[in-house]
Length: 603
Image (cartoon, one colour):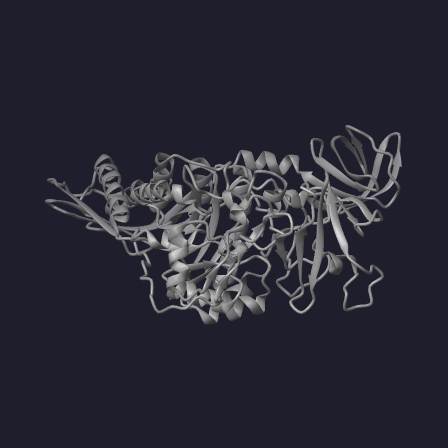
């Protein structure tokens, strides 16, 4: 049966542990260098701790080495990769194709930074030895279906979290504004800044709006469709997010994915164990810029958040009256003192805390004079976050036990939900039990006390209850037996898809452009060996980006504004985005329904 995976982010070991406990089937974590999140790095020892904890449940661990590499970094990158593999990670997530040429002998996943957008690219990467392809976030369900049908590689898809407005791996906007590069793990997120939309000649159409900032992804209601399309790994974004976010979002998606799997008997969850949240998961109560399915149903309007790039949270309703007393609100949800609320006003997002609630009135910490009808959001649910912080959620593996007593001793055998077994026995001269039924019941109670182990003993069969088994002996056997069961789980061989590179595989294009990110000799040799005829100097290493396309995107500002060139727009002529002395011309490819940003800055 096909194994289906819920993949969670981990900033560090603590976050990884939370993700595993909440029900993740796999986690992805950064090492010390070469990860696409410079704020989420870990020494090898922390990665090893993560592997050791995760393996108890059959949870896989992937290490992110998904930045571009310079020639003088190849040796260090290879050393980092080998150290992570020695620590036990199950696969490496890579952007730079040079890692394919390092003879690492490991499972490789092609990062979303590789920009897998077509069936041809997915097919090639599988032939080149990649076990998994991680899709671009801007794809439609039909595009995902076609890609999955075209490749033998596993297909991984983002389902929750922040969206890069540009195609991943092809965005140089941060690099054009500063020394910080997204392809080197240090994106400054200029897409979240305020921009002016101008004609480039002194006229401003829109001033000071977050014109490139898109809402966050939430596909929790669409997991079944993605399963049917061929997706096998469901990825949550957020290696910089806190533990509360991880606990809540992973638990929410665990429940949603389990519901989708329940109606598809040919699919099976990729790890073992049951997580029982001691709170009601609600992903919309964790960090969100507003929820969207983005372009899953095709390219459309309504995916941007012009007013703010910050977390607005869940919609509560609206303010129906504002007075010196506070706000009278219309909402179907309870509001509590300590909640954080925000209001989208004409001047932008305004946030404050709730000091008191008096019927339909709330008393804010800071009062803003706003008109009736102003939308109200909650970006901090005080009571929910309190329950989340107090959560002691555990993940347990179901176990059955069988104890057999005889005159000369006792044998205890455990078997877990995956068929892993362990047995322990003792030679002892047992006395006849005066009350066999009571003896059997005492044994059952003793064997079900699994304590702080990862196991939950759900059924106990007792044979030979006519022989008295002291409770201390049963407890001793239980402790030793569960220790052996855990050891047996850890000793199981792991399955990895270590695939060869087919030298006959042909790259889908004859030319790799400047945005193709060929920044070292190993990557250059790879592309040439697979039929590429011309490789342009990489934009990532250019002295300037002026005159170059610094972003390609399925997001179109004209579409978002209702000014599509194919629908009689009012805005004619060239359009530019401007901020802080930088100017970018917007080029529109109507045939592909894409937008490009060309750097027209003077410096």
